Length: 391
Image 1 (tube, rainbow, N blue to C red):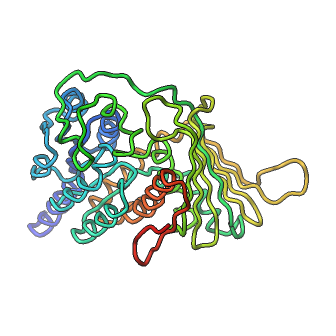
Image 2: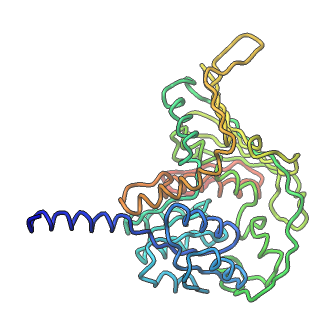
Image 3: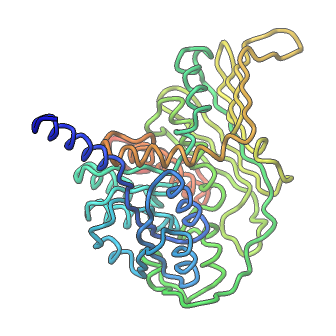
């Protein structure tokens, strides 16, 4: 082999080796979801080289789940200073998503941030500005956007199979028995955990059940609507609402602030209405049956749940027969892995991920308005030009 061909061959081999080098990620928030994502990141070839948590038992459990030799941090800002970390996973309570994501992209890291994108609307706009200015890759954890079954169903809608859609109805039903009564079993940096939230005395109930308190999240309403509203926006090509109205029942989970049973109605400038109902004092469902989205068109209705979709054309007979029906029991678990794989590929190629920051903001606007509407007891309008909520 002559010198020129040797150099070309050696260069190609070097490039291939670099391309195969695993992305080195850091985990911020090593609770249950964070450790689950750690396993999924490792499964698709990433190396989790650092773990940060303010609660010692979570930190140690996170280190055990991570790659061998992972560094431990108790302050996420120190993790962001680690030059060996290329990307971070933000799996903290919602009220920390914005600050951590902004700090991460400013530090030159790409980010996989759990849904919802943020807790308050101004945070979301600040996140978009920071992400675009720093040219980092940010993937929001709305994994349906990487689920092949949802992609297939969206093609039916995009192709006009339903005709004009003026109504979307969605629901998520299951059963939540109670809040956790776990006790603290190790050191907790409570002040750091609170972060931008109001100052309160240390409270294990709040720490282990943060999901159900207004300071940190919006309960099951926001947690589950984050997925459903995002899917509706994706399928209907919507960027922001016109108005949001949310009503809730009594709180039937002792100790919680956010009702587990509620109805969310959203009006859109594309001339359609969307309704989402959450009911977590219903009976228990298998995950195949616990949620449904229906796009009601003038020619057909498109139904899609976690692992099934069906196109039901207009039919004047008593029997409803889908013209297209796809059922893949057990397939939903793989979509988180597909979403992470899409993120890691975009980290390498610098292409736009399936759930970009703007999509996360679009959904976050609706979710934040839903929380405010529920607490104020009135319909709220979105002024897109002024970027503010109006009564």
